Image (cartoon, rainbow, N blue to C red; front, side):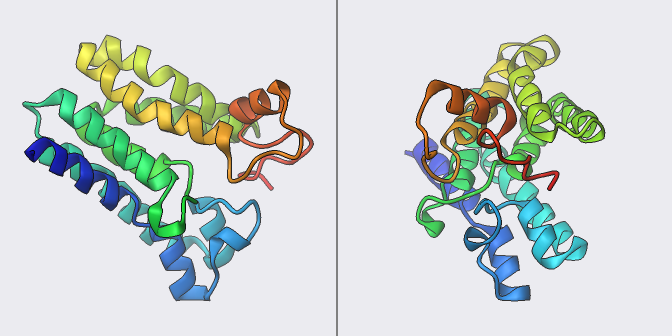
Length: 206
């Protein structure tokens, strides 16, 4: 029962849509109705600027730590799944009727507790990708590398922690915010690799 309570709490804390709350409070804008409709730090930055992005980013990272901290270092499997459900809550928030972000902020919080080298992997890939203007692809590479790299640095517990974070993030890339106009394997593969539909610009670079 305690374990179930931790997972449930991790999910609902993860589901708190700080980016959208900050955008609504500071600018009166619902991020679901702007740009690509993703409730993310990038969308918030465009609407409200860097100061509010920092506020929301800190809160998103913090909410990712809640479940793993409650699970404790002595229960790595529970901590891994608590981290994973926090990402699920963020990406498909019940407070936003299933809308959400991509999970990067809470993923950093989860990894800081469960397997800190994962933060370097995820952010490192995204920074490099930003330089070459392929942010969507960089996110994909970072997420795919999490489990194998953490298996090397942190053993089986690290691999589980990385996989629990990566799986919902990868699924969110495929699912997007809505079904594509053309539902083919090519479109979904493009979403997975680049985080947007074919013919559309990388939302993080536009």
